[in-house]
Image (tube, rainbow, N blue to C red):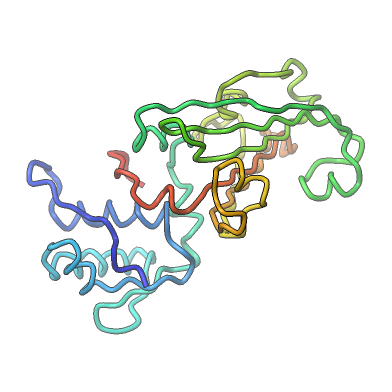
Length: 247
C-alpha cells in the first residue's frame, strides 16, 4: 500500500489545491506505481499534512478519469488499464525527465555493433530475418551515477549513416519526439527483475526489480524501423520533482 506519497501545495500557484494534488498524483503514479497498487487517502493526508478533504476530492476526480477505482472508504486501487496511458501520454524523453531531479545529466554510448537478424532475433524484436541491425547501448547518468541503461536497435536500411552516433539520446539519433508524425510509436511498460549485468552497471543488487520500458518505432507506412528497451530502477524514480507539464 502506497501511503508515503510525496505531495505538497504551493500557495503561490494559480492552480487550486485540488488540481495541484491531481497533477502531482498523476506524475507520481507515472513514475513509481505498481499495477493494482492501493492508495489510502487518510494515510496520505497524515503523512503530508494536507487536509483529507482535498486529498479525497482529488482521488474522486481521478476516479472519474478512470485512473483509480474506489474499493472502500478513502482507499483507491490504481487502475491497471491506465498504466501505459499515464506513463506515456505527453511524457518527455528520458533525458528531460532526469533533468527534473538531477543537475548534471549525461549520456554515454558504451557499446555498439551490427548484426544480421536471425529468425529468433527477428521474432523477438519485430524485425525480419536477414535484416541488418545496428545496435547501440547507452548509460544515462544523473549527478554522476547511472540511472538508466538503454539498448536501441535500428534497421540499417532506414538509417544507413547511423554508425556510432556518439553520446546523445536515442531520441536525438532517431530525430524523433513523442509528437513527431514521422513515426508511430508503440510503448509498453512492465515491472520485472532487471538482468544481473544491467543491475551491476547501475550498482544495484543483482536481484533488483525495476521498470522495463519497451518502445517500437514504425514509419508512416507501418514499417518497423527501430526498437528500444530501457532499464530503470524503480527507486530512482520515487522522488522525482513534479514537472510543470501536464500529463
